[in-house]
Image 1 (tube, one colour):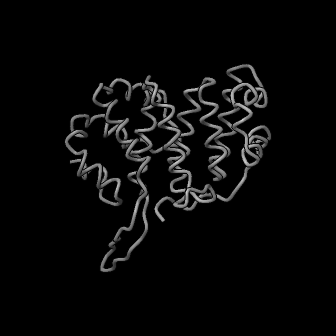
Image 2 (cartoon, rainbow, N blue to C red):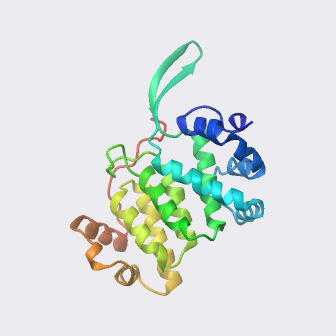
Image 3 (tube, helix red, strand yellow):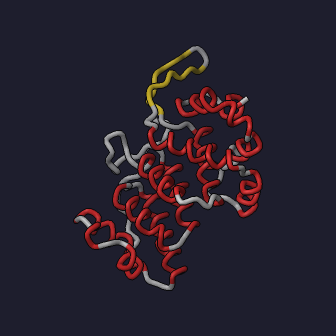
Length: 232
């Protein structure tokens, strides 16, 4: 049943079906709800429905699946179409991205201490390439979804995590969303972005590269080429 919902197009989808099939069936309405996360951000109704479907077991499953995603690196995949087949290196295909985005959105209605740090690690994994550098990224849509969750959670506690992502991930769309996130938190706190960073990020955390990112945060400038598609 899980394979029918998500398909079998990458290693993460296969892991969900093979290793988490029975547990996902236990929360099938929520799993199907995740599979509707096809926009860039959740509606208030989407979040209300997710909160209504949450159980302690579902919360534990969200944490475990995102932890697996942090450690996930994709791999080779044989693609078949008509009478042809070829090998590709795949991280996440579109159908899997939708489900992962839904899992991340659900974190917005989970009030647990682990949420901010784990969502940050997801952004760091998906926003960087195989060499750990930010000049390429594994999956731009998932990185943006993670940044959006942090931004909507708000509060000064998300500034250091957002700054970590900004210092590492160079995709232009992610940088734009980070700039909007800093603006939103600053407005919520009644501060400018510069004042916000001064109050929340210790000076010892700013390396020369990070300082350049900080200037980008206060000016809103972009910083690098966009990520390649997640499926390549």
